[in-house]
Amino acid sequence: MPMPPLLRARAQSPAILTFDLTITLLAMIVLGGWGTFWGPILGTALLTALPEILRDVDIYRNLAMGIALALIAVLAPEGLFPLITNWYKKRFRKA
Image (tube, rainbow, N blue to C red; front, side):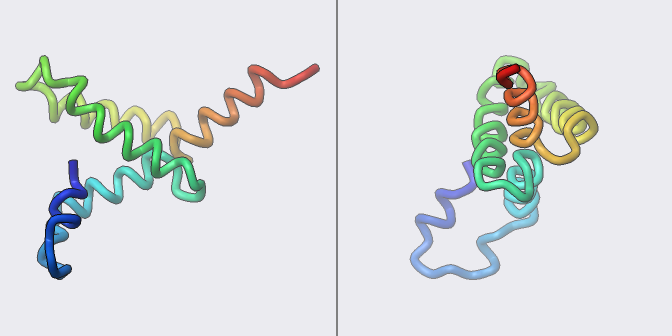
C-alpha cells in the first residue's frame, strides 16, 4: 500500500516519492478515470486489491498485473469508472 510511508514521515520531502510510488499513484488515477471524483478511488481500490488477489500466482503476479492494466487501458481508455457508469445507465435505463 503506497500511502503509509507518506503518513509515517514527520517531514515531507520529494525523496519520499520514489519513481515506483509515483507511477503507482498515477496508474491509480488514470485507471479509475482521470476526470471523475470516484474514478481514482476505484483505481486505488483495484490496484491495492489486485496484488492480494494475485498472491497465489506469486511468480507471475507482475505479468498478470501488467496484462490486466494493459487490457483495461485498451478496452476502457477513459478509465473504469466512466465505463461502469455508462454500462449501468444503459442496463437500467427506464424505457
